[in-house]
Length: 92
Image 1 (cartoon, rainbow, N blue to C red):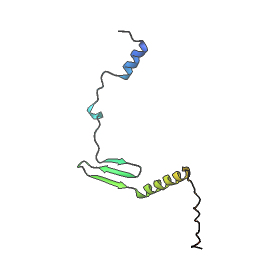
Image 2 (image 1 turned 180 degrees about the vertical axis):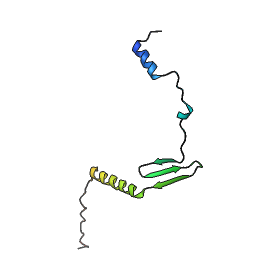
Image 3 (image 1 turned 30 degrees about the horizontal axis):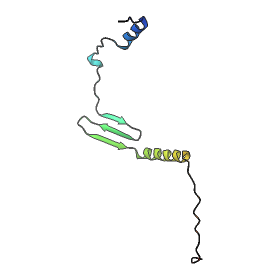
Image 4 (image 1 turned 60 degrees about the vertical axis):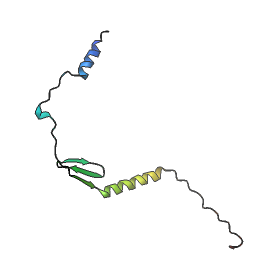
């Protein structure tokens, strides 16, 4: 087995510590209710399984309008000339 250089041995020691002991006080405890804030909505989950979902319609509408405006600015709109309708002798 080839010997490792000292630098490689040091890197291995830093990357993989052999033991980590975590005190009980430092362990993650769950906090209820769990609130997840999205860009247009808020989801609240309670310990008993209930879920409240609230949508901010004004913010959603504003973001959709902004997205449409940006799309219209960046989209290459092909304009076509209106079709010429030839009049027949019967119509004139």
